[in-house]
Image 1 (cartoon, one colour):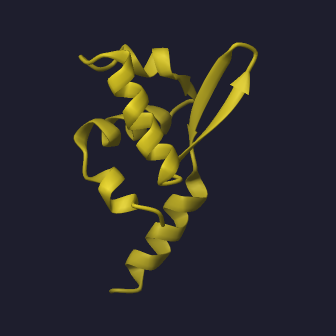
Image 2 (cartoon, one colour):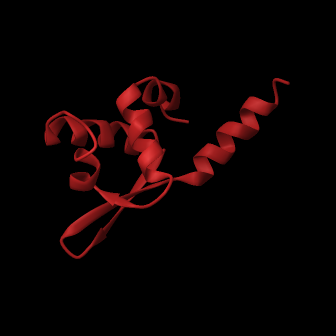
Length: 83
């Protein structure tokens, strides 16, 4: 789990994950929900990709981002060991 807790510690990145739980989105679609520059959103997406919380798929000229649910499943399995 590459820096997963660092990635989750940021409110903006948690917001991006919330958006992606419902549908795959482009960086532009994601940026519409935040009051920050597109390069800042791209940096957040880069951190989320590095931590493997999201994946990206190129479709035509667009890159769509989606949740990597298997990482969330692994995290939940790990957390429940501490019950």
